[in-house]
Image (cartoon, rainbow, N blue to C red; front, side):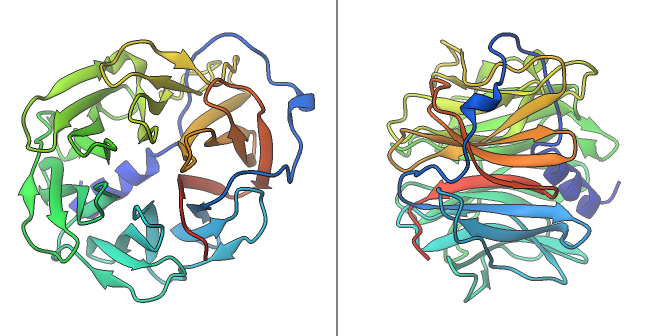
Length: 323
């Protein structure tokens, strides 16, 4: 498998999969569109016949102001907000490479950060001066790296030990804790079979498993603004009759709490990110060919829809942007 295909395979794992969890049923009464949400701006990418591997959009948390901010022919996906909400880091898929790039929140002033190669899924450090991202130095090597936003000082953080003839083993979905000390990330042992949640110090020391491979953790996550919880998707294994669900866990891997509790595989929930004030999560809920973006409190209450479409929305992130 080529490195470009490997990067794109990892991108496709960002939420298309499903899981098991039990409990509370989803009721129509819990949904109402256009409920007022808190401040900020949500970024995400759409996939579908019109968008290829993906183009980036922004939308307000109340579901208004949908705006496409990137346009082909190449794909732009997996964006992350700078702490001040003025800049987006994103993955820019080119015909023979995949770069980490920056742009203004309105899609203007695009500039590459990483050199030619195969990079994906950037995330800002809390001070906004550096990025953590996935890099494939060769078709059989994958890990997390950091780099300054001016493109200087690239440094390896992790090396995924699982190699299957160019298939993932991949380390991805890296997010830095609000105190800037810890990187939480997903380590893929085998695609759609064994995905675990790990953490490591931003100095590259202290690798620690948080959730086991058997939970098949989805390749997208977010820290709560106070650093006390990590939001994840559990069970992205496409198992028939099982449903994907959003949960949160402590930074020590303990005290797992369900945000959604779907059963049976008809509805599936995938995590996006916390609101800037930490009082909400934005998530995606799929039912058949319909994909909805919802707000919900981290304890699972006040679930309501803000956007629905037949395209697939991935890489959902909530920041302080106002464009």
